[in-house]
Image 1 (cartoon, rainbow, N blue to C red):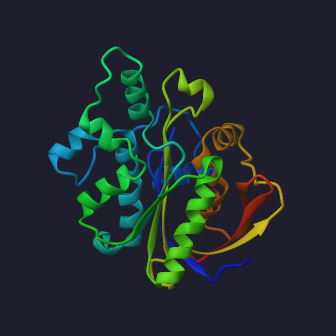
Image 2 (image 1 turned 90 degrees about the horizontal axis):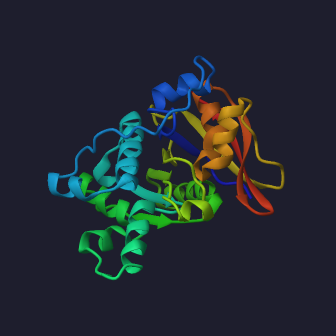
Length: 266
């Protein structure tokens, strides 16, 4: 299965030791060493103060990576369709709700309840950007990045308009962390366009493959790739950072991987 051509126009990235696409490019291109550090989230942009006080890590993370990718692409936020792809969504909020339900006082705050839904980040994105464009929220466990990438590309191609992928993971506190040990928050955003514009950085083509997933040559980045679901994107991001053409394979289903051919346009 091969898609039509899809063009990549903008990238956003935040994760452990990765503080934005510009800094991450230097790391992924080998111009500076990777130094592990706690994920640092910038101040939330665009949300009104009342909403800003209520949001948790997933909204802050998705807002930061989405706005960075859209800026790089020169995209119109109000008309940009979105795909939000998250493995666990708001882990801290889920933990707090379960703690409340396990206590003698089982009352749950309305704010926690409405932030507990899987598409909460999509709702806050609409508030912040004024966008009325279509938005999809999905989950595919460890395949969440590949599934989100295919969904965003499909939407862009079927609608003939750009689509923004926002893929992100956050970490559970204990005791849930022992069942799902994601070590840190990380997010990747990509603006995909079915048409080639001056903003295009690369041409992407997808195939389904039974080949083994591409690994990162640096041990610390490979550990990151294996331990955070959205970090499965790192081999693709490394090609983009190095501004070179090539092919990578990203984990998708148990017996079927996602092959990505990258043709650099920069």
